[in-house]
Image (cartoon, rainbow, N blue to C red; front, side):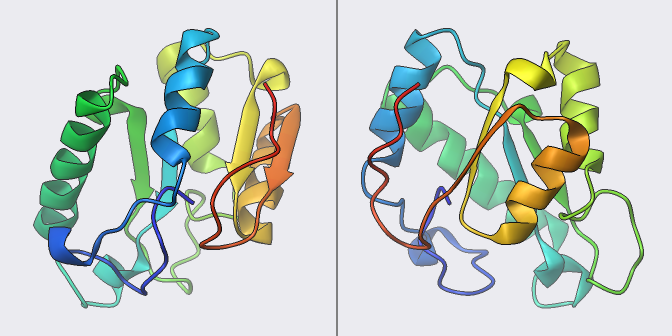
Amino acid sequence: MINIDHGYVSRVEDFEFVDGILEFIKKAEEKGYLPIIVTNQSGIGRGYYASEDFERLTEWMIGQMREAGIKIGRDQVFYCPHDPDAGCDCRKPMPGMFLEAAKRFGIDLENSVMIGDKPSDIEAARAAGVGHTFLVKKNVPIKGIVL
């Protein structure tokens, strides 16, 4: 829910931030939250684009976030490159990426917040033990969530 879903986005020119998301992340960070991005990238597993394409896009996205004053690093982005039939434990709605992030950063999942735009986002967060989840409308400016 960081970007507008244009379907299998892998290039900077196709990426568009959801209105208000950078400001929201910055405010959350100021309140002590550590931003973590968890994203399914089945376009890689389906052969639509390569991991390197996603990595380039991620570096650009992180740069844009840093320009907005957000202190985020590449290690705070977790992605599943598998197609839906792979049976992995990292693809949402499975909790693998959340559990890996919690282990890497010592995150207290029960006191964490997950905001997503798909039911599978919320299902994965709850399966991992995330205490607070918000399902927002896809491609709509983020508002109404108070941390």
